[in-house]
Image 1 (cartoon, rainbow, N blue to C red):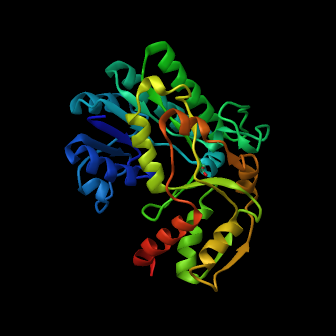
Image 2: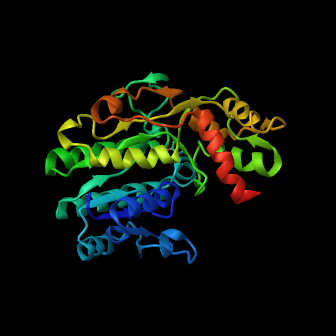
Length: 316
Ligand code: AKB
């Protein structure tokens, strides 16, 4: 990667990835884009920033041409709970944006990354040690767009030779930017509320295991996958990745080690619980480990210590 364009740069992954890419590849070599332009965001003020609605193919093409980028990182998409509330919009935005990004990558011969998700699995998928290659019949619109995205990535690689790469992200936890409308968001909210009120009411039920990862690992793995030798990548669209499989009570115990009085209660949201129930408990990440050396650094204990110390400065 030498010169990179990112869509959805103000989002949960985008804001931290943009900062890291600017550090690693140089501020002048990262073109951050998003549909909004808030005045005070570091993504907007600290480097190149352009407004881009990913459904606008002409503007996307013009930016790629003007900045002569060689890599496209496409992050703009609706998350699972919002997509379930607005399924038609989710299809238009998630698939329309992806098609535009793949087309421009084909035309300009760009290396391409877009995230898939554990949402690409469904109730018929094996729940534990979910294999890399398995049944994918999701029952959410988010999942439908993610499976379609994986297939389109393979199609553009096989048919047009576009160097497409992807991972199935688990829930991502970060102190920098809040996620917007995901099923795994409880695992972020719980840390904010632990510091504010020493208590949290979870919309996901006790005993619901889902895969998660701390954002620094997610940012590192995107760079690692994009820098890997193309010949090594057999399962390029998309690799299972995860750093931990946890339920709300596991996060409760981890927080209690730092804040002994922390209390967790439950008020389950049936929509998000239904989505969570259709996803795996714990996925098998051996293909990512073997093909490009995936190795996350943060487990639940290490992540909790870091989240609480970083967030303390922000919310207290
Ligand atoms: C969501 O909950 O929608 C996302 C995801 C797992 O893809 N965090």
